Length: 323
Image (cartoon, rainbow, N blue to C red; front, top):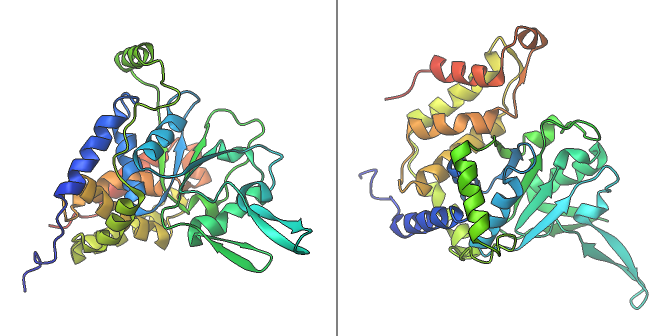
């Protein structure tokens, strides 16, 4: 039997993705790559950490995405005094029934934006571990499941360190991507000003059209299994991730979860680009956002001025690309 018989028709989906890109350009300027990664994460079913200085459209991107996908959107502003119950919910005594009822917290939504995630202490961060990995919340012996479409989009500021806490490695490993957002160019900033000047309802984003339903997103996620990923490419992914554990400049390499995430993301990235097969270019394109928040430099490498970006590039160059 031919390997091409089980291919899926991505024509309608590709058209929707192009409409989503067009809608995003109504409010986003110069962030095409970031938005493509966000779409990839949505369809791969992964969480995203967005890092950048204030005012570079981190929160705006999340809001635009939620508007397009007809998804329920909730925003949680993390602060140093926040408790786990402020996120997942708490049990409240009901005098009428003489029992405790569970009041769900804001994490029970489709797209959850956590602003300044590194401002909450470790106890509060730990409340996210279960829900990000297992899509459920445990409270007083009961388990509450999330909807099929659930995604955490978290932001953090890399510059301001006062009143912040470093995210635990176990939590960082639960993010599919870490996206670094820089400043726009002068030309892009001029376009941003033009958009703001022309659109008085910019803050509400009511001009962003609904493009894809929650059901369609979930359906495509299920179809990603049929995106062709050759055995040689699976081996390539394994070799790339394994190379992070053997690189002399690193003392912490990427986990097996990174391999799985890279495979899932590559399938979704191929799909949003209208292809039903993964290429080595897809894998190389996504390697950095998948691994760079999961690996850590050795003290010696840091003293020598080595960067994570340099290590990622070295790994891509060292591992042989399959034919």
